Length: 466
Image 1 (cartoon, rainbow, N blue to C red):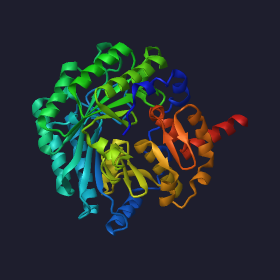
Image 2 (cartoon, rainbow, N blue to C red):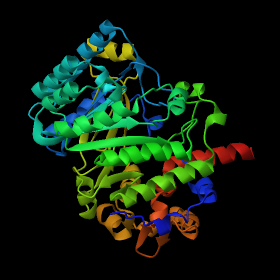
Image 3 (tube, helix red, strand yellow):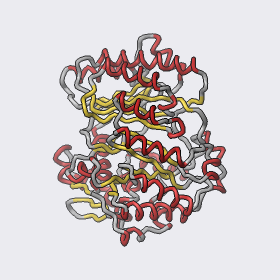
Image 4 (cartoon, helix red, strand yellow):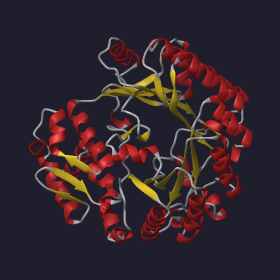
């Protein structure tokens, strides 16, 4: 359990953030899609599914369903989205999505039950209640969803009524993820997302009234036109609404990678010192309100299942973030969806036409993937242990993998000395222990174990030399 007393927080300053906080990696996925290969296709994917059926792997199942449609373009967004008001285009996509669900269901017939389901986007609630219900019915007819599983959906409060919330609960959803950027109108205008404060708070209340077992609010700091006062106002309102979880997201300005961000002016972004004040203020307020820091800037109420899972050593961190469910195989459904089967990762086609073309041929729309090496698996386990528990025992790694930790990671342990000197962790002959300060900069610590980052850095250095 990560309790961050206020006295420990302010050891972080802008110099530390500049040294260790300017990192964009997301270790829900390792390696990242840049290292997926097209040789990993539908045939390779099916072969790995067969390993499940023959009993070589019996991990639980989860489903991810991607709904790419949005009603408008948010300037800060970096997800695969399609702006559409054409009902025929939406209907066409749902028809192909339903067919993909049936194809996957046939391959996994009589397999283990599904413990987790996640509808992401885009905006899943862009769909009508009837459209969502039809997709859920298709899933329930082709997969065995366990009673009491974790069935999540991302919700846009601008499109939700009390009746729609009740309809989602009736369909089987029991976890809601609601995005909240900032309640200030100027901030909303700068990111092209007008989201009324009362509508957002009402959506949270409606989800609570409907009986959702978990409600997660995703707040973003570092947005254009945002300042400490505006951020504090929004945070205060959200804490008062008492959601189960609050996730603090750091806005990453990468206009060269995400085209919508090119509409944001660099001079409108808050300075690093202001961003630092925002995150420290948020942590202080959340801890004072009784929330527990799970990690990666995710905070949960004391009665949340993630808190118990972390205390008991059952917490996992993978494609969908933190979970109290065991590590599982994830079936990706829909355009651009990312899944995992055993020691592999895969991604569906990101282009709609290519996605449709594959399904027309009765072929799963797998665009690319990767079979993780033994080294990938070792490094992923190390990073996940640090992210979930803040302590890594060398012996625990050696128990599962045929390595001598200090020899295998000699380079990494040397590099971590800089983190130790900065007070982000402690090192001894038996373990790495992340400090409360280091928990806020855990990505920097994980990047030390990222072989692909190190290789890319060496290539850049070599290019400079020649």
